Image (cartoon, rainbow, N blue to C red; front, side, top):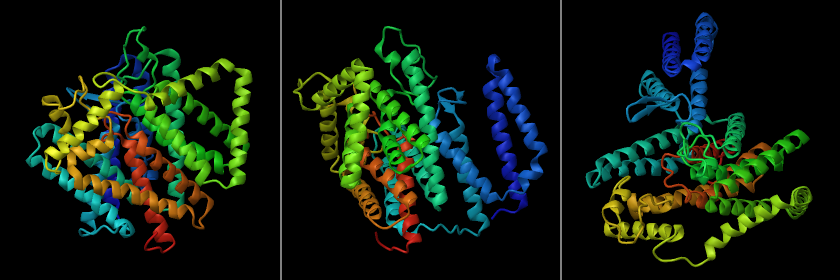
Length: 485
């Protein structure tokens, strides 16, 4: 526990970081001076109310900083970005090192011992440590040291998020807050997505910013992500939150909110054109209907869904027809024949072949962290045109880290799902079941959703889902005194 001196130091660091960020961001934009002055007024108010903040325990301050870190991990570079040449500093990159340093300080103040009740998930954590250590070792044979260091950094950030979530999500209230936070972030991102689709405008982080009006991508949603596939992957992980919300929330206004989120999410997913995440959604709904609902609830859901579709068919038959045509086109692409040298499907299959080739060519050790793109750029045994990213998370792990880490990750992933599945079938509280069900479906959908983006190593939502799943397993085993699930 920090004493008063360290609590004051903590507050000072937060004041300094926030004031520097606000000042730098807004003084360079004349049209935002008014907002900058408002931020300055807020800082002055906080300074004069510092005695009130001193009454807050350092532990509570760390918890607040943790939530700020998770919130900004969603937004990434979309807001309050400070450019330093090719490097961009944003709030998440400020909050993460600060909280890690403060945790390290806490360890030192406690004579090098930080008691973390995570012994129930020690084997999961052991694999993550082995994975990171192996990534560092691959520097010795990686062709491009810069690419290796970049991916090691992203892996470190992802594992740090996982560690923080395990450390701070300990009670049922924490998991409820996490669930509500994800829903709140979903509302925000859906609003931005609808704005992009309807206006053709984008945030500064989007790769579609400034595209010509005639270009179709101008109206693709990407929200706070660089491209639309990342946003589609976020939606693929988010649908289980909405399904569970509709399943367990009883009030009418909550049901209406859930239906609104479901409709907007589905509309924007179709707008992204992501076939993988559409398939992930179908898989999630199938598991939900036929494995997580009894037959009475299953019939009720089918009747409600059918009634809603019939209503839309009466109100807007053209929209239903266009939607069904788009779904049919997307699904047909999985079974239709493709040319061997051209087309998106052919390129993706050849990218996977390249990953397998280099995994074998490296004697199963992998080409090194983040180095598969460099190898494909220099020599690609299978034609991929100008594509370098594997667009497949599983193939990326295999090619970069080799067969042992790939098998370890696969067992890590399957075992989490297996344990969540067992917990869901046991006698637990309704809220616990809702959280468990959400994480279970999200992880199942991840198996397909993860092949949409070019790479998801730096995709923070996946680390948040895995971290929360491990935290929930740890919470359950400690609460119910279960050594094994």
